[in-house]
Image (cartoon, rainbow, N blue to C red; front, side):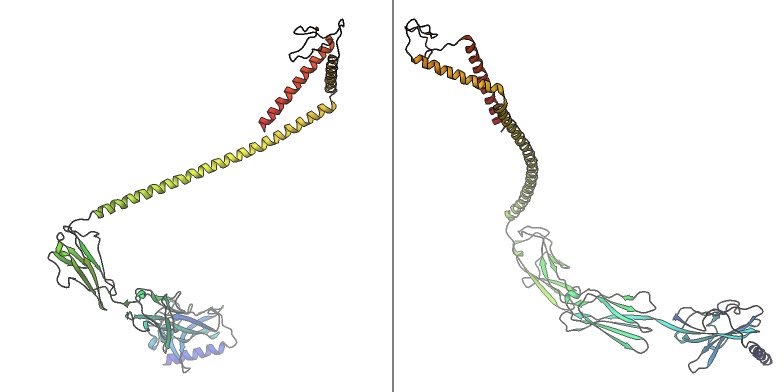
Length: 492
């Protein structure tokens, strides 16, 4: 007690000496700070004082303010006497550093909801006195969530299909992730408890569909998902199937299959024949009716299977007719089917090949037509040029060639002379005259006639040669014109 009194006096003296002195905190820099932590996790409350020259941190004390305004001492550390824990905080809190006067941060290893409140870090120094930092701690509780799915039956009225509940601090938010047509309703209770209910009208098509609950909370990086599949029960729907196409006497390994379906899975499948027990040698194995022997003629009749589950019963019937011998139509139909498949495949291949050939021929003719059109245009241009040149030649020859004019004049002169000769032949001829006419066939008058009986006119040597030359040139010119016209027609 005496030592405690002396320590109190010592602290009071330090307080008096610290009047007017300003404190220097490294963390937290503000006088008041808000922190947030999660329940069941470690919480750190920062506090570090920066000593000045000639200053010494003597003692560090952590206190918590109670709701009524009083202060509760948690832990203290003296620079020479070590640290001390008080009351219910003993074993629950500790200093972060082994030298609390240098680093006075407080650690709460496992935070509880009751740890929420205001904390005070009290620093005692010499000779500057006491300094404080206040920290307000908020404790969040991560949500604890559950989901309950309701067993539904087809045909029931509109009702709740699933319920999701979550408890946390602050209160979480719930939602549903599903494609089912329905509605949700949320309810919040005291203490951070939240519930959500999803309701719908149950149908068999909804069986097995997703109906997940999502839990949202600020302490979670992403929403928490609770997976769930909707369960809707409905009675089975029985059908009978078989792989046998032709039932005939003596057929082996024949069987009938009863398909039940339904939700839940059928728990029993029973077979009947003609309303009674099965024939000898026929047994039911699960959903199959197996004929363990060759078929007999008296196996014909009505077979019935009954499928039962927890919701209801469904029945199916199959009328079995057994022929005395195997039908030839089965093999024939199989062969016909194969033949039809082969024919169809062949026709398809031929059609494909024909289409390719037509395409290639069409492309070839198109290219050829283009080429012919180009050649025709070139020939047309060439013929037009040749015709134009020939026209120019004729015009030039008629208008400007003096030689041709002289030749034409010569032809005219020869023609006039021939006319004069004919006129002279028509005049009477007297004996003793020295005419140039001579008879070819020895006429009595001494006049020479040509093949047509006309008198022949003989000119002097120069004029005869001139006329023969003109005839030859005229004939040559005529042949050239005919040759040119013929070549032009061929080109066209």
